[in-house]
Length: 73
Image 1 (tube, helix red, strand yellow):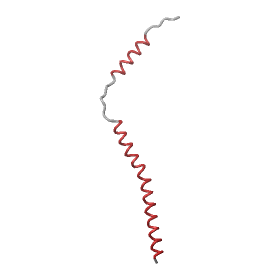
Image 2 (cartoon, one colour):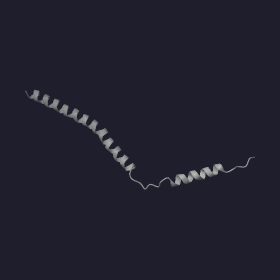
Image 3 (tube, rainbow, N blue to C red):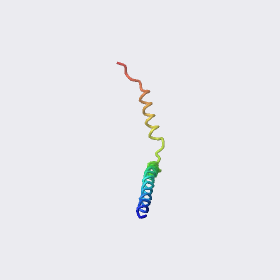
Image 4 (cartoon, one colour):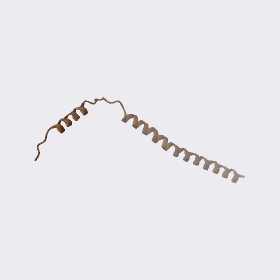
């Protein structure tokens, strides 16, 4: 009778271990997803927008340089 009770306790304990292992494997991607969401929100935080001014100025300088006649050799 005692052996039967001990074997049943072992099977319950084994089921507990399997359940906890499955829970741990499910928590790993959940923690990773939460971490990725936090990093994404931090990376996409509001920054001072500087507009298109510097880029358009650089493009205007590029066009002016390309339109200059160059001396032929």
